[in-house]
Length: 292
Image (cartoon, rainbow, N blue to C red):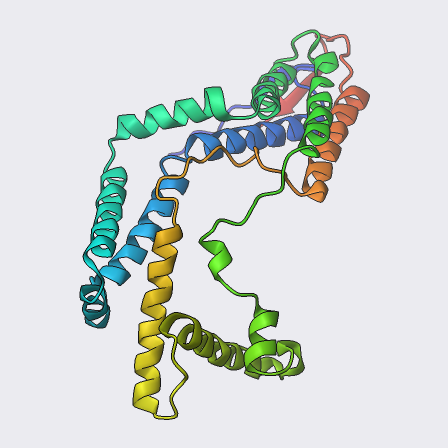
């Protein structure tokens, strides 16, 4: 019923040694992953960034909670207009066409992507392919990859560290919250109590800073104060949002030194293994390798 699969015979020397071959395939996978991560940014990263901002606007507009609708209606006309305009702009961006996103993707890869990153992706795809095809000179060309990685590491040290956005700066630090509202460091509380204590401090912060009131001892009034404080905090976030901030690519900002070091070590290791173990032997026609 089932035919026995015939064995395929390849002359000795048809393939490069197993270990360099595996590393070449891994290198190809890493390069394609980096390429797809950058190319897919307008389709994934930017899309979810816009969607998360729309959810914030939905909360302030009262589209998710009726309570916040009442707070929104109490705002002055200018504030309402700004919120509605931002909401409309985000929805327009979220519904952009496939070809618009494709244009952004090409722009990111061809223009905005750092030169070292673009060069590494190109050579990390071409060189392993040439190695697997046993093209003459590929073994020597493999040293281009660690050179690019080292140049990238040196250049990365002069990049600026990512700065917190104005919106992110609205969030107070845990240590400050605990010192001000709990009168001691959060680490002094048992682990199981730390979350509830931080939440308590956070609620007091919202009430004092965003409602300009003192926390009430009445549970019902206290909950109302928290609700009002949360609304005004998220309204402040909206006012600080950079709606359609440009994404310059994940490698323009300074990367952690350890990550860049691992990146360099991998490329050097790949080059060393390839040069040490990838030695072309004369192909003998008589001996044969059996591969199932």
